[in-house]
Image (cartoon, one colour):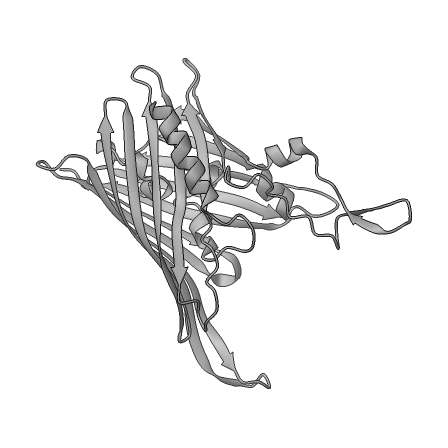
Length: 338
């Protein structure tokens, strides 16, 4: 009965969301910390104490993250910068675990021009999300939800809205195995800058698992994302086309197996030492979207490292976008428990 109810809720949620058109505030799809960036960005079942994991999935809010403060910084494209900050706390007389987080994408100072292109001043632009989350563990299952106030500012123009993340994870009582689902960015946007209809949020339904084979120093994560919209192919007819019998251009058809693969992300942590790990990830959708026409290179591949020194954790992740271009993310998590 529980599984049937969950399926109905997911189906209703997916049907209520637009699957076409461009989404707004797409920065909400970026990885919440450097560890996620190194493993392929979309995973949400990772064990660990990094409090920013709740931004990825509020069902990861458990007592292991209590009194942990985490910060990640991603120098993004064209001198923009994404900063994620989160803190997790549990109260003795209140069940469950609470968290607060901030996501802030700063576009910096831009030059303002008139109709003729003459500089007449400067202005700033940024996207942001303020999150409050709650998670509660019942036996081996943790359920959680997070409410986010999201928005964007561009000079004197504004875009804002509300979003909800919710999910559940199951942790095996004896094995290193976590599995679950998460529904991300369920909500709405209002006040679309200068007017008009606001775009939809980047809605995403994911299922996934993280497991460590016994006696192997390796932890593997597998995630299926965007289950709410099967076709994730951007098939630009100006670049990808075939010819019919009359010599006319027609859009190139994408096979079903390829469409399925674009929903999958894989990551692996090599557990070299209790205080040191190496990480590697692969995202097939990013590889196919960002690769050059002649070669794929390292597009869609990510890597990084994790180091623990006393109560501090230092993380580095790098995602390769295209030939000669990548994004690095730096993170730190600190335990404030005495």
